[in-house]
Image 1 (cartoon, rainbow, N blue to C red):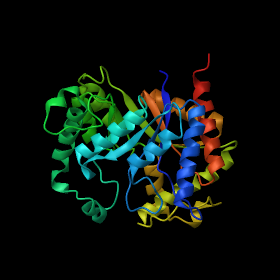
Image 2: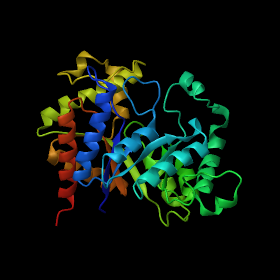
Image 3: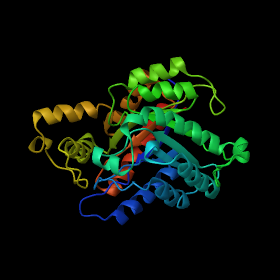
Image 4: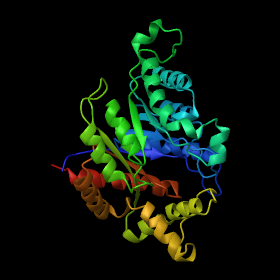
Length: 334
C-alpha cells in the first residue's frame, strides 16, 4: 500500500442559527487548523442558489483563505468552468497566484453546481457543455502560457504563471478528458461513488504525459466524520445524512444539528438512497478511521485523499480532522 497525501474540501457550510459571516470565519479557522496538521491543500467548491453552502464566489473566498494562511495550498474543487469566461478565470487565478505565489490550485468541473433554472441564470447552454468544457481548458492553458504574450487577447495577471490545473469528475466522462490532456484527476466520491473505480481505471490506462504531469495523479474525495468514540461519530454524522435528505427532498436549507435517531427523519427508501450516495463516508473513532483508510487505499491506490466533513459543531469538526490526520499517520508510522 503506497503512502498518500490528505487534504480538505470545504463548502463554507451555512448552519442553522449561524450567519454566512460565521461560515467564512469557520472556514478560515479550519484552514489554519489543518495547515498546522500538515494537510496538503484546502479546496473550496463552487455552488449556487443553496442556503446551506456559501462558496458561490469561489475565487473571492480562495483569496480570503490564502491571505489568512501561510503554506497550505488553496484552490478550487472546483470552478465550474462553463459557468464562466475562460479569460475571466485566467485573470482571477492569475491574480491569486500573483498574490500567493506557489500556493494556488485550479480544479475544474463541467457541472453547473446548482439546479437547472439557476444554471440558465448563469448563462449556460446545456447543448454545448461537452464541447465547450474541453475547449475552455485549452483556452486556460493558452492564457497561462508565456507563448501567448504576442496574442491579441492576453490574461494579465495570469500569463506565464505556473498554476496547476486539475480535472474534476463524478462520472467516467472527465476521466477520459483528464487522461487525454495529461492532467491530475479528482473524483467526487463523497457524493457520486458509483463510477469511481471505473473512472480511475480509464484514467490510468489512457493517460498521456503532458508538460504538467508525466504520470497519472489521482485525488479521491470522501466524507470523514471522526470522534473519540464510535457512538459520538455516528451521532455527528446525522448532520451529513440530514443534508443529503434535504437534497433528495429539494429542501436545501442550512445544515442541521445532529439528532439521536435518523429513523425519525428518513423513510426506508430515503435511507437506502442516502447510504448508497455516501458509500465512501468514513465514520468512527481513530482505529476505525485507520482501518477504513487502509481498506480504501488498498482498493483504489490513490495519490491523495481529500476529506469533506459536514459536522455541525465547529470544534467537533476540527477534532474530526485531527483524528483523521492521526489515523492516516498511524498507517505509515515507522
